[in-house]
Figure (spheres, rainbow, N blue to C red):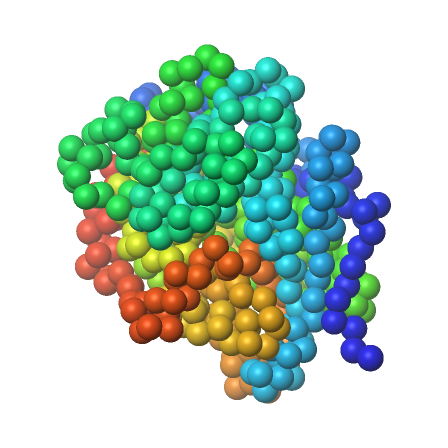
Length: 456
């Protein structure tokens, strides 16, 4: 009998998160004050985050202990399963071995609770009454709503307007867990009103939603802000995914040549790949890590490496990142979680140092890969996850051309059962590919007025 599923026991849930910064040959550059443009310390983050998360954001420790209460709540869905995709391999007619880590078993249906739970926990420990956040497709907003409900904290979510309209059931899921959800940009904040004055029909963006959530948190002493990607502590929390996958690959008697994950701000990609990159950095292995991003939002493949704001209005610290510019408003593709102008600091440094790779994929190509996977394996992937799948299909084709079968692991980061309208549009032929032109990229980069990164 073929072994398709590789399961771990609850006792195998990692006891620590992995901090890749400790192993990086070049450490990330410091954040800058949005006004003075001078390097800032941890104290600058205190209005937005609880102290324990700030400590995790700046720590150089390799392993950070997971609190028992967080691990206990993780047992609702962790360890998540790893599968060998035999039927998908057969459909593709490949000798490559394809594995996937399935994070759709979590309460909100994606990998996002892996960081939502500890973020809510640390806020609760410091007596925070309310947490504000942004969300694109609603995966992060749903996860934080779930976590806040568990710890008795109010949750206020600014959801990108186009996703608010495309994905009403994620809004209802957030409401079920007690969250208040607003279509961003709103008239509730100065940032939202500023955007609406410029464009009353703005579809919104993650950058705009971040501006609104940050503003609300900064103006209320009992309120903090939570981010679902990009920041160091968020990426670190997600490494439980890759640590479990590493054990499961060992159970399978295998090890990937290539690890692939979707890319929006970096948490999805970091969660699966960083524990495998540790083997490259510690043991000199050569596992390829590929970030799969939308061709309509190609910050890794076509953006520039420089300091930029994490939000549209310019309220956050300046971060060294690959970016298309904080004023960029992406095309309203259905992978709302990947529609972000910039990349996390750690991932950006790794890409700059050529320790990871990135590929941009078109929307139709992604949906076709998602449908093929659902026909073969029985799970309908979230639109974000289809970007990894499309990249896997490309790598399979490349391996066929080279005559060298590969072992590929990818992150099936969430299910697509709240995204049926997107698949409906695909089946009706209404999905449109969108790719930025060279002129588009040139114009976007010319508009960036934030500090450049000077090479040593």
